[in-house]
Structure formats: C-alpha cells, structure tokens
Length: 338
Picture 1 (tube, rainbow, N blue to C red):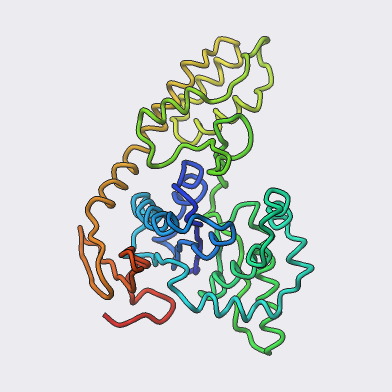
Picture 2: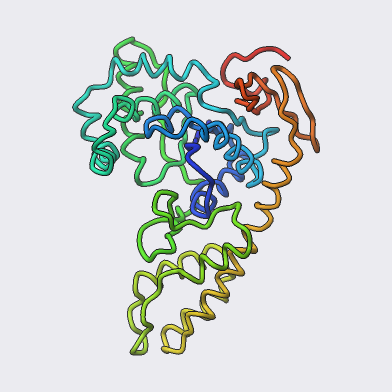
C-alpha cells in the first residue's frame, strides 16, 4: 500500500478543474492507499490573503472536500497549521536548500513576474515547505500537475541530501501519481489556459444552476467553421474538453460531427454543455449546503457524530472555527487522546 499525500490552498472555492484534475481521483485513492489530504493554509500565507476570510475559506474547502466524496473514516483530512511538525521539518530542510536552486524554480520566477511587490522569503522557500508536507508522512506518491513536478524533484533532492548528510535512509523519494489515469486538464471558459480562480474563468462546485448556465452561455467561441473538416479552434477545443469530462461520449461525438460538417450551432452546444455540467455539480453543491447547515462547530476534544462520520476537533480559533477534522488515531503525528 502506497502513502499518498496532497493538499490544496484555501484561497477560495473549489471549481470544476479541481474536481476533475484532483478530487475525483482522491475519492478512488482513499480506498486503495494510505491517504493524507490537507488544507494548505501555511502555503496560502505567501500571497498575503485577507485574514478575515482565511478561516472561512479553510472551512469552505473542508466542506467541499467532504461533499466531493473524501471520507474521514478511510483517509486523514487535516489543516496544515494544526500540525506543528510541518514547520519544524521545514526549518530543518531549509538548512539543506540553497538560494540559487530556489530562485531558479519556474513557479518562483512566475510569481515574481506577476507580483513584483510581494517577493517574500516564504514565497522563495515554498518548495521547502512543500517538501516538508510530503516527507513528514514519508509519502511515496504525490498527485501533482505539470506546474508542481519541479517542486517534487526538489523534494526528492532534499530527501537524498538529508539521508546522505546524516547517514540514514529515513526519507523515501516520492514519485508523481495520477492513479493510473490520464491527467485531466479542464480549460477555462475564456478561450485559453486552464480553469483557475485567479483567471476568473471558473465554474465552482457551489455554483447554482442559473449561474452555471449564465457562465457557459458566455463562454468564448469562434465565428464557426467555414469549410468541412476544418481544424478545431482553441476556444471550441476547450469547450469540447469540458464536454469530454462531463458529457456522454455520444454527445461529444455528435457535436464534433456537427463541427466537421459546418452545421454546428454554438447556442445548442452551450445549452447541452451547461446541462451536463449541472448534472455533475448539482449533487456536490447540495451536499456542501447540507454539511455547512448540519455540522455543529464544537470545542476542543468534543466529538460529534453525524450520519456515521466521526469528527475530532483538536482546537478552535478565538472565533470558534474548527482547525481540524479527522480521526485522531489516523493522524501521522501526535494528537491528544480522546
């Protein structure tokens, strides 16, 4: 059995790209591997989020994790900052991480280019903190996208350095993992790039049906094919990519054939796509509402059981927000006995 670890920053709501790119596979992995899924609130601090919304975002992500199918009875779900060993290991690993190699990472260069006024040390050391998340649990498999592969290579490098310097075989070398399936990249609705919160081109898992229809009907298209069997333009290829994820194969094939013979009607295409997206999102959205409405936020070391799910609260913030939901006996670190 492999040890799998993955996290997501609480920078807003989860969207369709998060679901098909990660969460759907997570729900399968949890039944075959030893899984740790966390909410990366330390990582979120590198971009200076609004403190008044950060705690609420943590809780939202947690509800969306559960609504998408992650089960705390079989996987460990935790908040990064609730595990002090993460910060401790990050400090130790930073002694073996060199400034030059951190400055050369593609993600750091990209962040500097986009936000030249926020080039902080935490941003530079982001790969070290990510390595700490992974190595703390001695994870052997890490689901990552193309933009994170360089960070995972640095994690392996730090593991090798640590083992070599201290003469031990303590940390394994983690490998990328996609559960044996093709990685799915959901493009945005603006005609280019991937779906992302910062790009404003998302369909969120919490969107109402009317909002989804409105967003899809505004999706960027082209002027339409002018000759039979014309190459598919990028905006239409993006719509077909989303349709491939949410629609029946026969539906996708129908519209591809209509494009090839120049009889496609983009209004019909978008209407069909919207309904198929709604069919995927609606059950998750309703589950999110149910979780947010039914869960009682409790005090330290209280246990509440709701519909068979046992949640352990390790501590709360002054405003009463929960910082951890998990079964204590499944944590890979020390927690208080219940």
